[in-house]
Image (cartoon, rainbow, N blue to C red; front, side, top):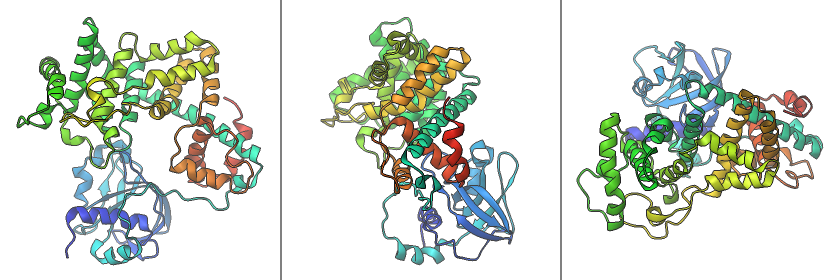
Length: 471
């Protein structure tokens, strides 16, 4: 049976992950020999399909990203030739043979090698070896003979702490780039929107933050009563996102009474705001609902952001977070608790019984932004942003407090990287990850994996705790 077009692309991705291509004699579309050394790590976020792959082409070793399409034109149809995020792509994997020798162009003007694979020829070999069709977590390879794992437990913990501090500095520098042309409040707003999108809806949330920037939302909420401010914020975000019932159900599907009551003022306000500000709403199909737990639907996360904006719109995100630090001096535990509290949004009112704009689904009572997500936002967004601010504002006292908060912050939820790194680093140690895991050591594990383990910078890793023992 001939494979459907979508099936071909899915199969190509599975082939690349399966290592079935590693032992084959491969050639690029222009006839040069190609050897796959490492397939890279599957990227579940926006950007290339696989990150940090290693291939050898015509005897030359290349490290970079891999993108998968059905045809070479897919590269251009998806706009990758104008997207700087794809400037690290070194190989374009396609399932339909191009006409003659060819290559595609990156945004920076470089030509990318292409590899044509006939999925029909590879199908049986793959399906015999792998029958599980569920979507796995990204494959993380354990370095079996990790030099750091053979050192003392306190050395491992010191290295993790040093890597965690290095990660905070790195993120702060990345935020410096994002701050160009944006306000502090817009920076924090966009980063938090991205975090609420998780992996499947990150890009739509980021696009929404650009379409309805913080200053625009705040201007609409100013000089009106609080209830109207909340409604205008909801109307602007849901409308710009293309998620109001008039945008997703143009046929006028009958809604339940609570939905009609909640939505009616939002629809009216969106009509006024969109006309006045000339906002072109996103398409509803840009948002991913499929295979998401209802509690994680973008409608609920967006409702959470509406409440966050309502909490901060009078003073702004930056001033709001700074006041938490100023108000509690060196009461580090209290500051941590306040940061978690202000970013945790309980489900209330309409969203206590709804996942999206449709007939009520009882017991949708989980938080719109839960404690774990709030902690993640603190560690990965608030602390790096304020750390950068402390340098820009020459606020040494704030910087010292931030360092203490970062060192004392409780551990976040485990992910595939932290679990694998714990297994890799402590298999020869009695410490087993330390008596009290923290966000600092978790962030350190992620940093070690991405910047030291993947590129096999083992000797530099061993020196990390000595050369970067403090901020």
